[in-house]
Length: 67
Image 1 (cartoon, rainbow, N blue to C red):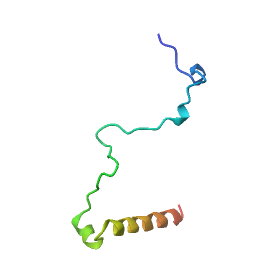
Image 2 (image 1 turned 180 degrees about the vertical axis):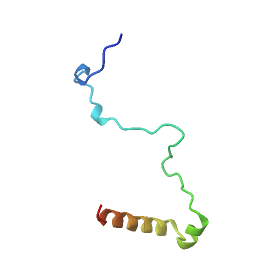
Image 3 (image 1 turned 120 degrees about the vertical axis):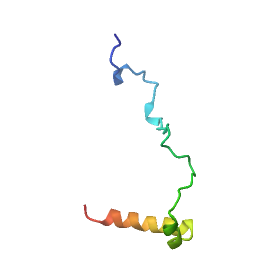
C-alpha cells in the first residue's frame, strides 16, 4: 500500500510555485484561435476592434454593477 503524499515529503529544491497549468483535451482553444460570430451580430459590429470595444464596455459595466 502506498503512503499518502504530503507537502513535507517534497525535497526543498523542488519549487512547484513556478509551474503553469496547461489545458489539455478536446475543449481547449489554441492561442489566437478565431471565434465565430453570428451573422446578425456581425452586421452590427463590422470589425474585430468594434466587437472588442463593446465587450470591454460590458466588462466595465459588469464590474461596476452592485452584486
